[in-house]
Length: 478
Image 1 (cartoon, one colour):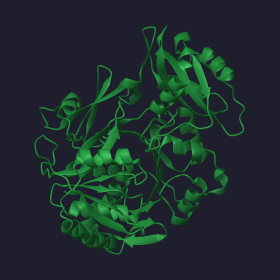
Image 2 (tube, one colour; image 1 turned 180 degrees about the vertical axis):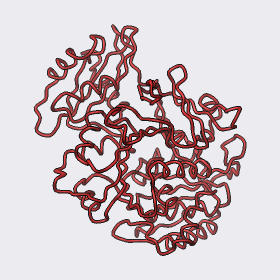
Image 3 (cartoon, one colour; image 1 turned 45 degrees about the horizontal axis):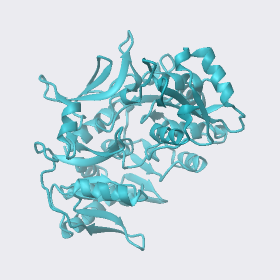
Image 4 (spheres, one colour; image 1 turned 45 degrees about the vertical axis):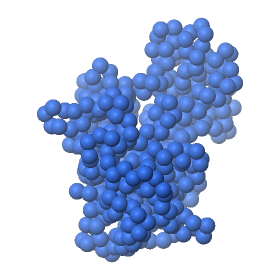
């Protein structure tokens, strides 16, 4: 099955069904399909051929969804670029991908296809064996250099099938997404909604939570995917004013949700099921915690998604299944480091680089990114463990823990903390709390109280940005 089959099948079997609500406009599956066919013709006229890469440089919008399916109808490969990205970043992606065209807005705001002059490379594998490539999703690794994750039609459609099966999605669902389409969590809301024949309500962002909550009530939203920073903003609202009787489930991914926030969400939305999930761009989704287990195991990310396996080997999570990427674009060396092959099934095996543990029930628990582990005087420190301890302190809204170079200890532990609104939380209070609940070598050497914590484009608090800010201020020597 190809990803565009999801749309085309719905345009045939439920042509008048509402597929997308965005910007005050409503679109049926037939309308989206017809418009995608028209734009596919524009791509062909612009010289786009099968296997070419096409940048979709549009914000969350109906035009972006149409463009994605238009590229696939043209048998080309799409990648979504934030239209507000820095020119240097955008130029790097265009060069790295060898993009043949860009779908972007002209001066009047109308979406147009702009051809690009670039040597054509019809080997859509980026130098490895040919694959039926559908998308490149660019993600930054520990070095900050964008990596193009190659996702095939099989990767995307299998993930959509698996995810809809455990979320029990049907055509009756109305899913609201504020997540960027340039990331798999956001893109996955399109594929899962269209797989189920559901309605997707697409919003540009979560900058105005009250407006989004109003939309949820008005549109009778049944499914709401979030990330931890959204949970923080959501819980700051007076939720008694926003009754959401139709909300059936909430999902969390992209980063681990602190236990304290998990419990607050359960209390705020007692009738909605909460799915705690784990994934990477390289496999989209790897695990989920069945909602009936959330109260007993709020720090777990559960079990492998249906049709896949996930095992902890030497502390690292290994993921197997049809959802695992085919590799990194133009980087066979890095691909060979993280991808293996299951000799029995032939499926790819992803070495996630994430440290995990399991319990007696076989549930998975995320420990830390291997690259984020802090080494203090030879002791290994997991930042997330310290974050969970600090998050329990009254007055803490958000916290991020990371390491910075230290002449004496090798690395020093730093905690950046954003107090809750109205709180007069101090660094000394945080340190006293840590001294009472942590081993001495785990106690942050520096506590940085900040009004905001920087986030990446996908909503995660950026440890890399905080580390750079701290090092520039010379906090490692404090």
